[in-house]
Length: 214
Image 1 (tube, helix red, strand yellow):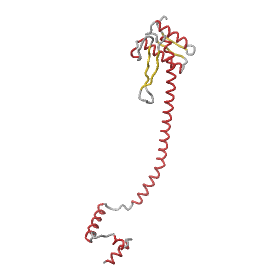
Image 2: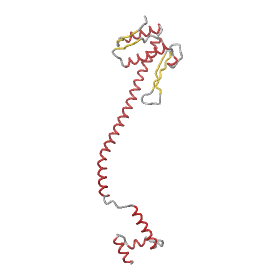
Image 3: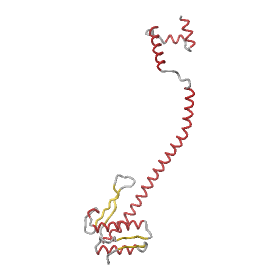
Image 4: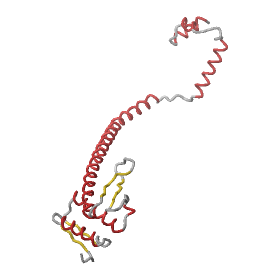
């Protein structure tokens, strides 16, 4: 029997001496038989062997290889797009900051001309997003107000006119239509408004509607 077992092991590619060396006192014949039965039951529960597994694997491997190239192209395109978005974001932020500074300077220069003094400025607000909000700080002569919400109707209108005219200085247009912009203004502010329109008319044609004799 020992010779039969040794021959069987050699057929299986095992060295009988090496196999015997792996056994210990606990590896009785009964236990080995039980282990063999347990392995047989596990194999049985695994079900029938898929004889086409090698072919299926080759087919799936070919499909994966065919998808790798489009996947690489999409990944490269995505990286290119993200890089372009980052570059556009940097350029947009830089352009916004430059334009904001120029507009703020023009607004600070125009506001005193319309009010006969005072000061005003623009301040960015928000959490640093690409397009932050803008706060208008306006202090007409003799007032300590800082928010446009605390100004009178005429002062708000004149502040808005100062901002619009400041934008016109940055990006001049061929003509400008003003429809009763002076309606809420008193006589003094109307005169300053008319003088500024006259000065700006050297570069822009103005068409304005008004019921004010001044």
